[in-house]
Amino acid sequence: MPQKKLNEKTLESMASKKTFLARKVFHMADDPHYILVPRKMLVVYLSVITAILSVLFSLLITGSFIIYLAIPALVFTGYVFFLFTRVWRAYKYSLFYPVAALVMSVILGFLFRYLSYKL
Image (cartoon, rainbow, N blue to C red):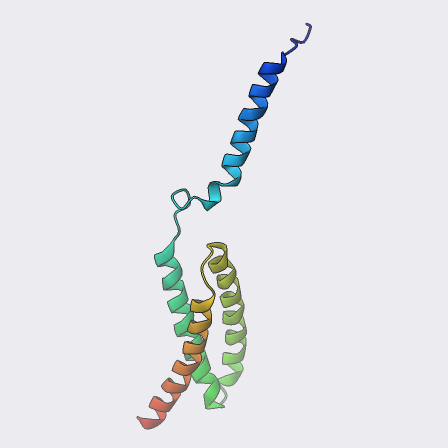
């Protein structure tokens, strides 16, 4: 069966359609209506990680035998925090909030420890 030869106009039309579709797919991620960002879920995860880090920092300050449990948990939570920031940046959010949450967790850890000594 002989192949059908396409004329130049048909080839140009097919190339323009492919170019249009390739451009559409390439710029699809920039369209804010195409990808629904899980903002609420990311903020909840950031809050949970902040709470866990603040509790672990308050346990580290005690200096008792619990430090042997807190250090591996802190390393694991730090790794989870690192992975979370990569997901956070994938949605093109600023790193200000995760860094502020990390600083706030250290401050809250010291505050929890201070309040536990007062009580």
